[in-house]
Image (tube, rainbow, N blue to C red; front, side, top):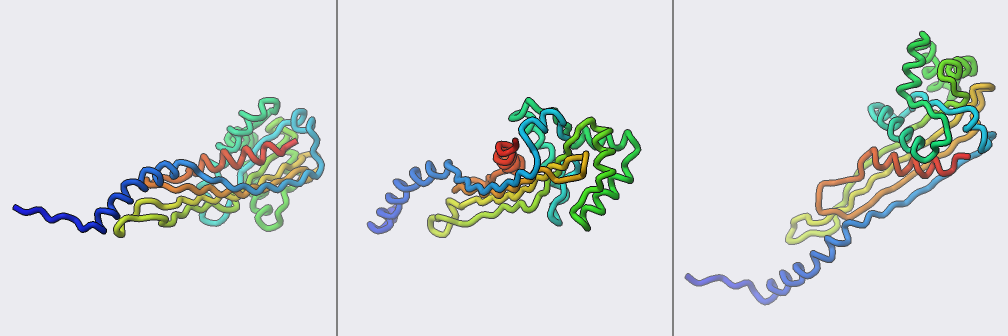
Length: 221
């Protein structure tokens, strides 16, 4: 039986592919991260948070991403606890338990309904939240956007070998003072993660939130 030998051109292509593929695969492991952080320090000093403590209230989110609000608050709070052990911090679940235990569930719901229309939290309700949580400052996160996408980068004979995974997360954080109902600090973070990959992997929501949280928290007084 005679064997069909590949042409010289094909052999060169296969050789070049075999030499280039390990180099391409090794380059896939290095992700690129681009970050843009903006903060506005309105009236919050380095000692205020230590003395007053901070409690997280229910985040808001873009339409279609409501199910991400609880994971967002959990991941952000964990990063804050790890990086700022000097602060008294109440997680979202603890805040909700305190609100429900105090019989404020309906008033809490109305506060957020008004917030969606006006962008304001009622001062009287903020003061009630401060009493039941024991925290002067209240933090609200906004999930402005979370997107994941992929683009083909390189292939062999029509087969996809490498593609670029892209993850974009946009966060906004406001800190409210319960005493006068004022916003005393706010910051936004937009982070883009991109890496070439040969596998069906991507930056997870939790990982993206943790890195974005670290950027915002580093700017807190």
